[in-house]
Image (cartoon, rainbow, N blue to C red; front, side, top):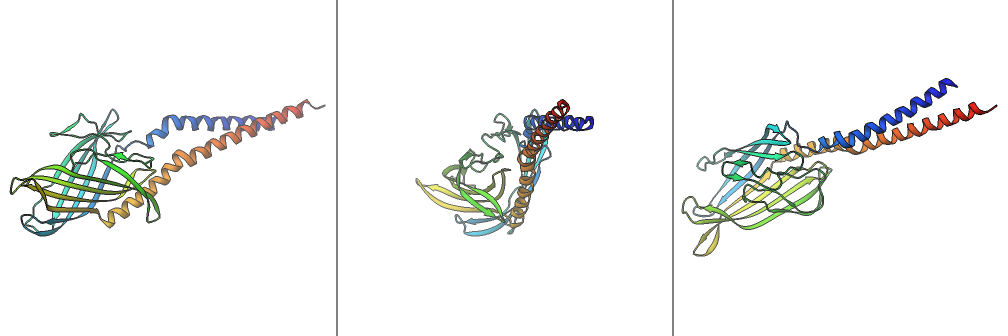
Amino acid sequence: MKRSKKWAVGLSLLGLAVIVFSIIWITAIEPRFEKLPTDLDETFHIKATVTDIFPVARETQVEIERHQWATDDKDGVLYISEQLIFTPEIPAILFEDTTLKMAVDRSSREYVSDYADGDRKREALWGYPMDVKKKDYVLWSDTAGSAPYARYAGEDEIDGLDVYTFITDEKDIAYGTHPATGLPLFIDLVIEEKVEPHTGITVYGKSTRTVKVELAGKKATAMIITQEYSAETTAEKVSDAKHYKTQLLWATKYGLWAGISFGIICLLAGCALIVRSRQSAGKP
């Protein structure tokens, strides 16, 4: 009988310990999964087509490598460097490698607006948050130099992965002056992104930039630039999203509630055994 009582008490204590640990996990440990990792290091390969219309008609295929990596983490802010390397197929068209610097709040994924990258200050979202909703988001665009809306456009599937589609469509954005003529430039910008909603990972992206030159009060198309994730990058991001989605769900939902359920069962079973042992002890 004493051994049975010990088992009952032990089972109750185990259940209580599991429940307490689960509560600590929810309040203290789980939020860490929602933050940008301090070891962020990603590379994207992008296929681009540059179609010149004015002043000379020509088309160029360009390879773009975009590398982002964390350089520092301080007071909940992640400092990120980004390098863009353009490899033209036609050597006559030259692109310069570009390095950008930015500061992003690890929890909200919003830019720290008072952090300056040269004369540029960014605002709004750096990227999609975890637990993406079917709603519009405001994300910063270096191309636009502003934060246009990415509007929810429906659900889709890529290689068995459920994703949300977001579309950005902005017109007549001031874009400086034409390098050869000095005429004012404007762009129409269309961006399509497919995002895994649990992790916020963008697994596919495509953009079209229509550059227009203004002459005598009228705008005419001077250049069209299309950019699209390479098939290899999309496959890599889909694989990453599947992996992190599974980890995230088990860490924050499935495993967590399984632990709480197990703890409650152990606690109730232990209490029931204690009551039963006391009832047995009270019998003549």
